[in-house]
Length: 341
Image 1 (cartoon, rainbow, N blue to C red):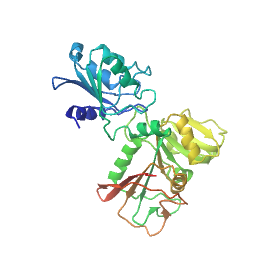
Image 2: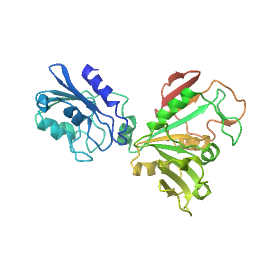
Image 3: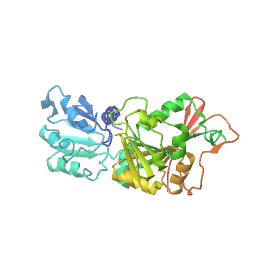
Image 4: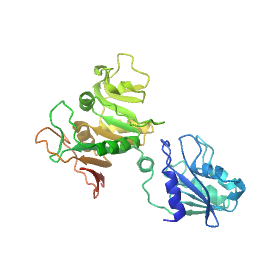
Protein backbone atom coordinates (compact mmCIF):
# COMPACT_ATOMS: atom_id res chain seq x y z
CA UNK A 1 0.00 0.00 0.00
CA UNK A 2 1.19 3.53 -0.81
CA UNK A 3 2.82 5.15 2.24
CA UNK A 4 0.52 8.16 2.09
CA UNK A 5 -2.54 5.91 2.00
CA UNK A 6 -1.14 4.04 5.00
CA UNK A 7 -1.01 7.35 6.84
CA UNK A 8 -4.62 8.00 5.82
CA UNK A 9 -5.70 4.65 7.29
CA UNK A 10 -3.82 5.39 10.51
CA UNK A 11 -5.65 8.69 10.67
CA UNK A 12 -9.04 7.03 9.97
CA UNK A 13 -8.69 4.69 12.96
CA UNK A 14 -8.60 7.69 15.29
CA UNK A 15 -12.31 8.28 14.66
CA UNK A 16 -14.15 6.61 17.56
CA UNK A 17 -17.53 8.40 17.47
CA UNK A 18 -18.57 8.08 13.83
CA UNK A 19 -21.56 5.84 14.68
CA UNK A 20 -23.50 5.20 11.43
CA UNK A 21 -20.89 7.04 9.38
CA UNK A 22 -17.73 5.26 8.26
CA UNK A 23 -14.29 5.87 9.75
CA UNK A 24 -12.37 7.89 7.15
CA UNK A 25 -8.89 9.40 7.08
CA UNK A 26 -7.34 11.90 4.66
CA UNK A 27 -3.83 13.13 3.92
CA UNK A 28 -2.86 16.10 1.69
CA UNK A 29 0.44 15.74 -0.15
CA UNK A 30 2.48 18.07 -2.35
CA UNK A 31 5.92 17.40 -3.84
CA UNK A 32 6.01 14.13 -1.89
CA UNK A 33 5.62 16.02 1.38
CA UNK A 34 2.70 15.59 3.79
CA UNK A 35 1.09 19.00 4.33
CA UNK A 36 -1.74 17.96 6.65
CA UNK A 37 -4.03 15.14 7.69
CA UNK A 38 -7.46 14.72 9.21
CA UNK A 39 -10.11 12.19 10.10
CA UNK A 40 -13.87 12.04 10.58
CA UNK A 41 -14.11 12.53 14.32
CA UNK A 42 -17.80 12.53 15.18
CA UNK A 43 -21.09 11.67 13.49
CA UNK A 44 -22.67 14.85 12.14
CA UNK A 45 -19.42 16.82 12.12
CA UNK A 46 -16.79 17.57 9.46
CA UNK A 47 -15.63 14.71 7.28
CA UNK A 48 -11.97 13.72 7.01
CA UNK A 49 -11.29 15.70 3.82
CA UNK A 50 -12.60 18.94 5.33
CA UNK A 51 -10.59 18.44 8.52
CA UNK A 52 -7.42 17.82 6.49
CA UNK A 53 -8.03 21.07 4.59
CA UNK A 54 -8.63 22.94 7.85
CA UNK A 55 -5.33 21.64 9.19
CA UNK A 56 -3.32 23.28 6.37
CA UNK A 57 -1.26 26.22 7.58
CA UNK A 58 -2.63 28.14 4.57
CA UNK A 59 -5.54 27.02 2.37
CA UNK A 60 -3.59 28.14 -0.72
CA UNK A 61 -1.34 25.09 -0.15
CA UNK A 62 -4.16 22.90 -1.48
CA UNK A 63 -3.71 24.30 -5.01
CA UNK A 64 -2.20 21.53 -7.13
CA UNK A 65 -1.92 19.08 -4.23
CA UNK A 66 -2.93 15.42 -4.06
CA UNK A 67 -5.52 14.19 -1.56
CA UNK A 68 -5.28 10.62 -0.27
CA UNK A 69 -8.52 9.47 1.34
CA UNK A 70 -9.62 6.04 2.56
CA UNK A 71 -13.15 6.30 1.13
CA UNK A 72 -14.75 8.06 -1.83
CA UNK A 73 -15.61 11.67 -0.90
CA UNK A 74 -19.31 12.42 -0.47
CA UNK A 75 -21.26 14.35 -3.09
CA UNK A 76 -24.56 14.99 -1.31
CA UNK A 77 -25.97 17.24 1.39
CA UNK A 78 -26.45 15.25 4.61
CA UNK A 79 -25.37 16.27 8.09
CA UNK A 80 -22.62 18.28 6.35
CA UNK A 81 -22.15 19.83 2.86
CA UNK A 82 -20.62 17.74 0.03
CA UNK A 83 -16.87 17.27 0.39
CA UNK A 84 -16.31 17.14 -3.37
CA UNK A 85 -17.39 20.77 -3.81
CA UNK A 86 -14.78 21.99 -1.33
CA UNK A 87 -12.10 19.77 -2.88
CA UNK A 88 -12.74 21.38 -6.28
CA UNK A 89 -12.94 24.91 -4.84
CA UNK A 90 -9.50 24.76 -3.20
CA UNK A 91 -7.76 23.43 -6.31
CA UNK A 92 -6.83 19.87 -5.37
CA UNK A 93 -5.54 18.38 -8.65
CA UNK A 94 -5.70 14.66 -7.82
CA UNK A 95 -7.64 12.48 -5.41
CA UNK A 96 -6.49 8.94 -4.57
CA UNK A 97 -9.19 6.87 -2.88
CA UNK A 98 -8.83 3.44 -1.27
CA UNK A 99 -12.33 2.30 -2.20
CA UNK A 100 -15.68 3.37 -3.60
CA UNK A 101 -18.30 4.22 -0.98
CA UNK A 102 -20.84 1.34 -0.86
CA UNK A 103 -23.62 3.73 0.19
CA UNK A 104 -25.78 4.10 -2.98
CA UNK A 105 -26.28 7.81 -2.24
CA UNK A 106 -22.54 8.33 -2.72
CA UNK A 107 -21.27 5.32 -4.68
CA UNK A 108 -19.57 6.55 -7.85
CA UNK A 109 -21.18 9.97 -7.65
CA UNK A 110 -18.30 11.53 -5.74
CA UNK A 111 -15.81 10.23 -8.32
CA UNK A 112 -17.95 11.47 -11.21
CA UNK A 113 -18.30 14.96 -9.72
CA UNK A 114 -14.54 15.28 -9.25
CA UNK A 115 -13.75 14.03 -12.76
CA UNK A 116 -16.40 16.27 -14.30
CA UNK A 117 -14.69 19.23 -12.63
CA UNK A 118 -11.21 18.39 -13.86
CA UNK A 119 -9.86 16.53 -10.83
CA UNK A 120 -7.88 13.37 -11.58
CA UNK A 121 -9.16 10.38 -9.58
CA UNK A 122 -7.30 7.15 -8.85
CA UNK A 123 -9.36 4.38 -7.26
CA UNK A 124 -7.14 1.76 -5.65
CA UNK A 125 -10.02 -0.57 -4.69
CA UNK A 126 -7.90 -1.43 -1.68
CA UNK A 127 -9.26 -4.20 0.56
CA UNK A 128 -9.17 -3.18 4.21
CA UNK A 129 -10.61 -4.02 7.62
CA UNK A 130 -12.20 -0.62 8.26
CA UNK A 131 -15.96 -0.11 8.26
CA UNK A 132 -16.83 -3.80 7.96
CA UNK A 133 -20.38 -3.32 9.26
CA UNK A 134 -20.97 -0.15 7.21
CA UNK A 135 -19.87 -1.93 4.04
CA UNK A 136 -21.94 -5.03 4.83
CA UNK A 137 -25.08 -3.01 5.63
CA UNK A 138 -25.05 -1.16 2.31
CA UNK A 139 -24.17 -4.26 0.27
CA UNK A 140 -26.64 -6.68 1.91
CA UNK A 141 -29.33 -4.23 3.11
CA UNK A 142 -29.29 -5.57 6.66
CA UNK A 143 -27.05 -5.44 9.74
CA UNK A 144 -23.92 -7.52 10.06
CA UNK A 145 -24.81 -10.23 12.60
CA UNK A 146 -22.09 -11.45 14.96
CA UNK A 147 -22.70 -14.33 17.36
CA UNK A 148 -20.33 -14.36 20.32
CA UNK A 149 -20.05 -16.80 23.20
CA UNK A 150 -17.51 -18.15 25.67
CA UNK A 151 -17.24 -21.84 26.45
CA UNK A 152 -15.14 -24.45 28.19
CA UNK A 153 -13.06 -27.10 26.45
CA UNK A 154 -16.02 -29.47 26.70
CA UNK A 155 -18.39 -26.95 25.09
CA UNK A 156 -20.25 -25.68 28.17
CA UNK A 157 -21.31 -22.08 28.86
CA UNK A 158 -22.25 -22.59 32.49
CA UNK A 159 -22.00 -25.32 35.07
CA UNK A 160 -25.33 -25.08 36.86
CA UNK A 161 -28.67 -24.29 35.21
CA UNK A 162 -29.96 -20.86 36.21
CA UNK A 163 -26.65 -19.80 37.74
CA UNK A 164 -24.09 -17.66 35.94
CA UNK A 165 -20.63 -19.22 35.66
CA UNK A 166 -17.41 -17.25 35.23
CA UNK A 167 -15.56 -18.95 32.39
CA UNK A 168 -12.98 -16.67 30.79
CA UNK A 169 -10.21 -14.34 31.96
CA UNK A 170 -9.73 -10.58 32.23
CA UNK A 171 -8.17 -10.33 28.78
CA UNK A 172 -11.32 -11.82 27.26
CA UNK A 173 -13.42 -9.35 29.22
CA UNK A 174 -11.42 -6.45 27.77
CA UNK A 175 -11.69 -7.87 24.25
CA UNK A 176 -15.44 -8.27 24.67
CA UNK A 177 -15.72 -4.66 25.78
CA UNK A 178 -14.08 -3.55 22.53
CA UNK A 179 -16.37 -5.84 20.53
CA UNK A 180 -19.37 -4.25 22.25
CA UNK A 181 -18.04 -0.77 21.57
CA UNK A 182 -17.85 -1.56 17.86
CA UNK A 183 -21.46 -2.82 17.78
CA UNK A 184 -24.56 -0.69 17.36
CA UNK A 185 -26.90 -3.22 18.99
CA UNK A 186 -26.15 -5.85 21.66
CA UNK A 187 -28.85 -8.50 22.03
CA UNK A 188 -29.58 -11.20 24.60
CA UNK A 189 -32.42 -13.64 25.12
CA UNK A 190 -34.78 -13.82 28.09
CA UNK A 191 -32.95 -16.51 30.06
CA UNK A 192 -29.59 -14.77 29.87
CA UNK A 193 -31.24 -11.47 30.76
CA UNK A 194 -32.94 -12.81 33.88
CA UNK A 195 -30.15 -15.10 35.09
CA UNK A 196 -27.12 -12.88 34.41
CA UNK A 197 -28.84 -9.52 35.03
CA UNK A 198 -26.36 -7.85 32.64
CA UNK A 199 -25.81 -4.14 32.14
CA UNK A 200 -24.74 -4.73 28.51
CA UNK A 201 -22.72 -1.52 28.61
CA UNK A 202 -19.20 -0.61 27.58
CA UNK A 203 -16.62 0.40 30.14
CA UNK A 204 -15.81 3.82 28.71
CA UNK A 205 -18.40 6.55 28.20
CA UNK A 206 -19.47 6.65 24.56
CA UNK A 207 -21.09 9.50 22.63
CA UNK A 208 -23.13 6.88 20.71
CA UNK A 209 -23.35 3.86 23.05
CA UNK A 210 -24.63 0.51 21.77
CA UNK A 211 -28.36 -0.09 22.08
CA UNK A 212 -29.09 -2.86 24.60
CA UNK A 213 -31.73 -5.24 23.22
CA UNK A 214 -33.64 -8.05 24.94
CA UNK A 215 -35.93 -10.66 23.40
CA UNK A 216 -38.64 -11.49 25.93
CA UNK A 217 -42.09 -13.06 26.01
CA UNK A 218 -43.68 -10.38 28.17
CA UNK A 219 -41.97 -7.08 28.96
CA UNK A 220 -44.30 -6.72 31.98
CA UNK A 221 -42.41 -9.55 33.71
CA UNK A 222 -39.24 -7.46 33.87
CA UNK A 223 -38.06 -6.23 37.27
CA UNK A 224 -37.32 -2.51 36.89
CA UNK A 225 -34.61 -2.81 39.54
CA UNK A 226 -32.43 -4.88 37.18
CA UNK A 227 -29.02 -3.51 36.25
CA UNK A 228 -29.95 -2.65 32.68
CA UNK A 229 -32.21 0.13 34.00
CA UNK A 230 -29.50 1.70 36.16
CA UNK A 231 -27.84 3.53 33.25
CA UNK A 232 -29.25 5.83 30.56
CA UNK A 233 -28.09 4.03 27.42
CA UNK A 234 -30.99 3.15 25.08
CA UNK A 235 -32.85 -0.15 25.50
CA UNK A 236 -35.01 -2.12 23.04
CA UNK A 237 -37.38 -4.85 24.23
CA UNK A 238 -38.66 -7.27 21.59
CA UNK A 239 -41.76 -8.47 23.42
CA UNK A 240 -44.84 -10.49 22.51
CA UNK A 241 -46.94 -8.34 24.85
CA UNK A 242 -47.49 -4.59 25.12
CA UNK A 243 -46.21 -2.82 28.20
CA UNK A 244 -48.94 -2.21 30.78
CA UNK A 245 -46.85 0.19 32.84
CA UNK A 246 -44.73 3.28 32.43
CA UNK A 247 -41.12 2.53 31.51
CA UNK A 248 -38.04 4.77 31.61
CA UNK A 249 -37.63 7.23 28.73
CA UNK A 250 -34.66 5.34 27.29
CA UNK A 251 -36.77 2.20 26.73
CA UNK A 252 -38.61 1.28 23.52
CA UNK A 253 -40.85 -1.78 23.29
CA UNK A 254 -41.54 -3.45 19.95
CA UNK A 255 -44.43 -5.90 19.94
CA UNK A 256 -44.67 -8.92 17.63
CA UNK A 257 -44.16 -12.68 17.52
CA UNK A 258 -40.44 -12.15 17.25
CA UNK A 259 -38.09 -14.40 15.29
CA UNK A 260 -34.44 -13.67 14.41
CA UNK A 261 -35.51 -12.78 10.87
CA UNK A 262 -38.12 -10.30 12.12
CA UNK A 263 -35.65 -8.78 14.59
CA UNK A 264 -33.06 -8.24 11.86
CA UNK A 265 -35.73 -6.74 9.58
CA UNK A 266 -36.75 -4.31 12.32
CA UNK A 267 -33.16 -3.29 12.98
CA UNK A 268 -32.69 -2.73 9.25
CA UNK A 269 -35.68 -0.37 9.25
CA UNK A 270 -34.05 1.49 12.15
CA UNK A 271 -30.82 1.86 10.18
CA UNK A 272 -28.72 -0.30 12.49
CA UNK A 273 -25.61 -1.63 10.77
CA UNK A 274 -24.33 -4.19 13.27
CA UNK A 275 -25.87 -6.64 15.74
CA UNK A 276 -23.94 -8.55 18.40
CA UNK A 277 -25.87 -11.57 19.69
CA UNK A 278 -24.29 -12.21 23.09
CA UNK A 279 -26.48 -14.93 24.52
CA UNK A 280 -27.74 -17.20 25.49
CA UNK A 281 -27.45 -20.61 23.94
CA UNK A 282 -31.12 -20.78 22.88
CA UNK A 283 -31.33 -17.42 21.08
CA UNK A 284 -27.98 -18.04 19.40
CA UNK A 285 -29.22 -21.42 18.17
CA UNK A 286 -32.31 -19.67 16.78
CA UNK A 287 -30.15 -17.23 14.82
CA UNK A 288 -27.97 -20.06 13.49
CA UNK A 289 -31.07 -22.05 12.54
CA UNK A 290 -32.30 -19.11 10.43
CA UNK A 291 -28.81 -18.68 8.92
CA UNK A 292 -28.41 -15.26 10.48
CA UNK A 293 -24.76 -15.38 11.45
CA UNK A 294 -22.16 -13.55 9.40
CA UNK A 295 -19.33 -13.72 11.93
CA UNK A 296 -18.85 -16.21 14.75
CA UNK A 297 -16.58 -15.37 17.69
CA UNK A 298 -15.86 -18.04 20.28
CA UNK A 299 -13.77 -17.51 23.41
CA UNK A 300 -12.35 -20.82 24.60
CA UNK A 301 -11.41 -21.21 28.27
CA UNK A 302 -8.81 -23.67 29.53
CA UNK A 303 -11.16 -25.59 31.78
CA UNK A 304 -13.67 -28.45 31.72
CA UNK A 305 -17.02 -28.39 33.54
CA UNK A 306 -18.06 -31.98 32.85
CA UNK A 307 -21.71 -30.99 33.03
CA UNK A 308 -23.83 -27.92 32.35
CA UNK A 309 -25.49 -25.99 29.55
CA UNK A 310 -24.07 -26.50 26.03
CA UNK A 311 -22.86 -23.47 24.09
CA UNK A 312 -25.48 -23.94 21.37
CA UNK A 313 -28.72 -25.35 22.72
CA UNK A 314 -31.05 -26.24 19.87
CA UNK A 315 -31.12 -27.29 16.21
CA UNK A 316 -29.06 -25.17 13.78
CA UNK A 317 -28.62 -24.95 10.01
CA UNK A 318 -25.71 -26.54 8.17
CA UNK A 319 -23.40 -23.56 7.62
CA UNK A 320 -19.89 -23.22 6.22
CA UNK A 321 -17.37 -20.82 7.74
CA UNK A 322 -13.95 -19.51 6.76
CA UNK A 323 -10.58 -20.66 8.07
CA UNK A 324 -10.59 -19.40 11.66
CA UNK A 325 -8.39 -16.60 12.94
CA UNK A 326 -6.97 -17.59 16.34
CA UNK A 327 -5.76 -15.11 18.93
CA UNK A 328 -4.18 -16.10 22.24
CA UNK A 329 -5.53 -14.05 25.16
CA UNK A 330 -3.29 -15.14 28.06
CA UNK A 331 -4.55 -18.69 28.82
CA UNK A 332 -7.74 -18.36 26.72
CA UNK A 333 -8.28 -18.42 22.96
CA UNK A 334 -10.34 -16.17 20.70
CA UNK A 335 -11.57 -17.89 17.55
CA UNK A 336 -13.08 -15.73 14.77
CA UNK A 337 -14.60 -17.11 11.59
CA UNK A 338 -16.80 -15.70 8.81
CA UNK A 339 -19.79 -17.24 7.07
CA UNK A 340 -19.00 -18.48 3.56
CA UNK A 341 -22.32 -19.65 2.10
